Length: 248
DNA sequence: ATATATATTGCGGTTACATCA
DNA sequence: TATGATGTAACCGCAATATAT
Image (cartoon, rainbow, N blue to C red; front, side, top):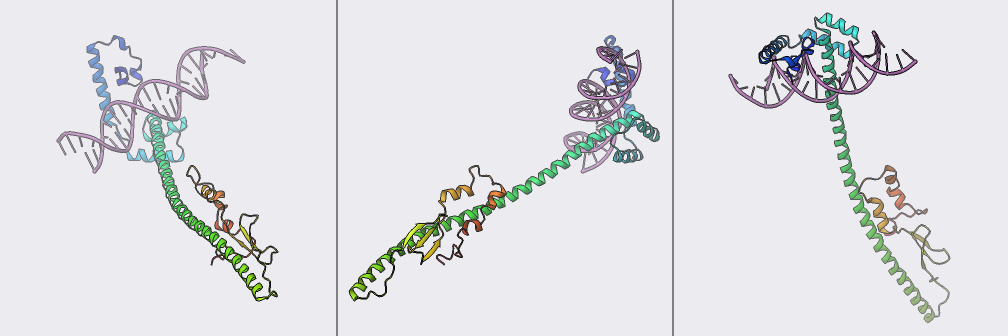
């Protein structure tokens, strides 16, 4: 900051600084000090002045020139002082507003984080539950095959018994077969639909888990989750069978 | 009508000082 | 009492706009 800047104000603005010698410099320094003392004496505005300025600012953050003159006259201030007060006030208000906005945003963010965490935990629990169910389904598939084999064996034995006993009046249809239904489930059929039972079979595991756990680990859209409720997964067959009925 | 100079105003950043813990 | 943090009046430099020449 040069001396001209130190002195400031209109009366010093256009001073010929090039011609300043040491003595003049000292003189001007003293003038600057005097100005500072003068400023120091009339430093803060009075409470009454502040009150009026604040109330003016509440109604309008920018003063029209005419209003500025009026307020200055009313408060016994220079119009420039009023203008500067409004400038500073706008800057302070803007700064405070930034703090308020930041605080609100931070609150929203924290809320979102906690909701995300609880959703993540819930999802994890569901994935574990899903895995257990898959295991149970696979086990029941094996049991199905065993029972089918046993059925075939029994019917063969009874046929033999019948032949042995010469009793051919009660013929049991032995042609139970295991087919794939159109929706991926299985149909236990006796060939002419006299015995028919849908059973639930999961889609291949990897596709299930892929849907539950997207590659990027982020939550998918609500639409994705909606399509994944238990109803739509387990209640695919049109019959009255429920998935738990099969081994229940 | 157009170009240039000058004045005014607002804003961001800074300084100097007062006040307070 | 000394000191660092904070608030505030005033200022500077710049850009945008209005007004005069």
